[in-house]
Image (cartoon, rainbow, N blue to C red):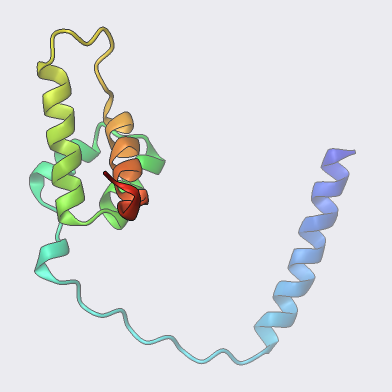
Length: 108
């Protein structure tokens, strides 16, 4: 039943896509050049290899250079703390950085 429902939804999507393709869509302008401050460093790239696909995308495309550095520093400090039974993974550091910057007005 789920498979039939899925196939039906695909059929509806293909009909709507063919309708949309008949409409003239103006070309989108080329994206602006990225500033040098948002360039990915070799340290960022190396850290990103440890991340899951989702966290890698967030780390490389959403984070500012300062947030990327904060995440890398957090990972380094987590490894140094011998009292932690479970050190933070790279993905956990990305999540923690997201939480740190989610509500900046509520920080004490």
